[in-house]
Image 1 (cartoon, rainbow, N blue to C red):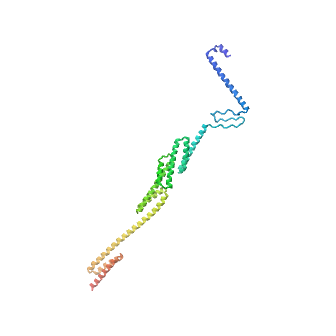
Image 2: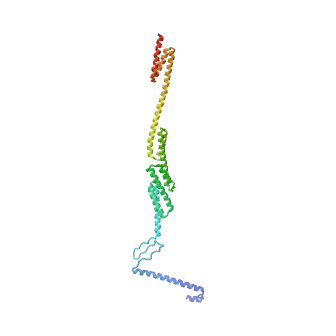
Image 3: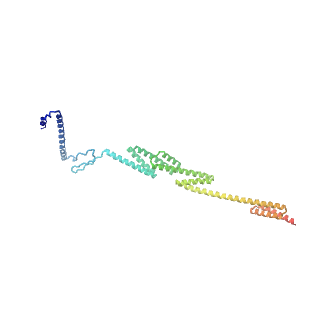
Length: 339
C-alpha cells in the first residue's frame, strides 16, 4: 500500500526515501529481536524452576546493594555480601573514633596529673594514628609522649630521690620540647616553679645554719623566717617542721643574749654607782686629813666617820681598816690637846 501511494506520487524512486526505508527496516528488526528476547526469558525461568534448578531471581545490580532479594517458594536467601570498599570505610571511621577517644582520655589523665595512665593512652592513640595515616596527629602525640616521659622522670627525682635540682633540670628539658597541649604546659610550669621554690628553701636553710654557727642569731633568724614563709606557700612540709625547730632554738639564743646584755648593763650601772660613792668616800677621807692637820679634831672625826660608813657599804674592808686607824689617831690627838 505504501509502495502504491509513494509510486503514484513518484516519491518511492527518490534517494531520500531509499535511506528512510533502510533505517525503518533496521529499526523494525531490532524491535522484533527485543520483543522475542523478553517473551523467551520468562518461559526459560519457569522451565528452570520446574526442573529443580535455583529458585531465585537474578541478583540485584552491584550499584544498588540495598535491594532486597526476593525469595521464590518462601526459600531463605543469603544476605548480600558487603563490598571490600565498604568494609574499609567502616574500619577507617571506627579507627578515627578510637583515636579521638584515646586522645581525650589521655588529656583527662594529664589534667589529673596521672601521667603513667596518660602515657598509656597517648601511646595507644599514636599507634592508631600511624595505622590510619594521620601523620600530623602522630607527630603531636609523639611530642606529648616524650614530654610525659620527661615529667615522669622528673617526678621520680623530685618525690622519690628528693633531688630537686635534678628534677628541675629534667622538667626544663621537657619544657624545651614545646608541647602543644595546655594541660601539659600548665602542669609542667607548676612543677618547674615548685622545684625552684624547694631549692630556694634549702639554700635559705643552709645559709641560716651558717649564720647560726657564727652566732649571728638575728641574721640566722631572718633567713629561717624567709625559708618558712616560702615553704608554707609551696607546701614543703618537711622543711616547715625543721624550720619551726630551728626558729625556736634561735629565739632561745636571742633571749639568752638579751638577758646577758641586761645583766651587763645592770652591772655597769652598779659599777658606776660604786665608783661614784667610792670617790665620795675618798674625798671625805681627804677632808678629814686636812681638818686633822688644822687641829680641828671634831670636824675631822665627822668626815672620817662618814667615809667609814661608805666603805663599809661598799664592802671595802681595806679602806674600812685604814679609816678606823685615822679615827683612833684623831681621837688620841684630841684628848692630848684638851689635857
